[in-house]
Length: 424
Image (tube, rainbow, N blue to C red):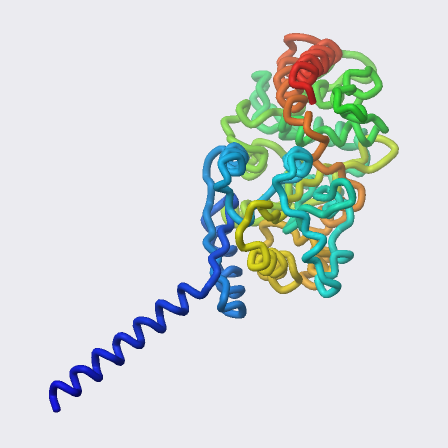
């Protein structure tokens, strides 16, 4: 009898083992790659993926964070036929990958219940090309004005500036040099001297960054009015009727690593940042009394920048239907709400924005409003080249090594030479 019982026990254990193996083996594993801005972001996404797996037991998601040179890694893997089934794609990089035919068009998978019309149209359009949809946006952020309410009160400024002229004037009022050593202890504005943060100043004046062929065209004198105001604010202008005293600093001027840190440390009274800075301020500088507002209108039209990222599918994926199920969940109302409720980013679906109350939250509402008129950080396949040359020369103009007009002409000419050589 003991022998029979032992055989039965072994049989039961073997059955359990085989059953367990079967459930694992039968599940389709979908590989997803992305980046992370913080450990909390990774934990948040993993939680959403666990919710997905609970309702889709036949699919397992293996999430991988690529920590360095993200797009270089993705492009290398695409060439080597080793890319994940799904991956993040920034709008900046989308034109090149859409043209390269390495992304699976999503149109055959999209069903009426996916309610594609619910996405903010401009963000969805960023991932469409030739009448096909290659990605569904997962989130976005625009830029808005952050300001220190205590420092505004000390300067007797009751409201945030609404026009660019008011912004320049307020920045000077908020700059303080109590020991009169010529080096302000507090600047009115914290400046990030990058094209990705400031190209809306061209658009708001009715100017474009590139022409239809992708060549840079920003060096026209009229295009530079908004950028010149930043240079003037940083360097100050000669004494005169409309002179400007220096009222801006870049992070390295005050020993900070970012615009957010400048504001948090009280080194500046205003910065232009994305919604990602809100949870940062609350966690890192809990005593900071800050508020947000739409960016002061730089011309006749309002302006800001928008950044968006989509989930896209590898055209060589061997698990396309399962990958679509994951993608549809993450960009659907349930998955997007779970992902965006932490406030790090804003949901790309308008219904989820409303349901989470971001459009009425005083801190987030300026970012939501900006989505209607924002310049999306996307400019064709040549934008990365233009960006590099612009940033190098704009910094040179800020430092006074040359005029802004000279700097931008050099940036435009050198970028266009490289674009021509690269055969774009």
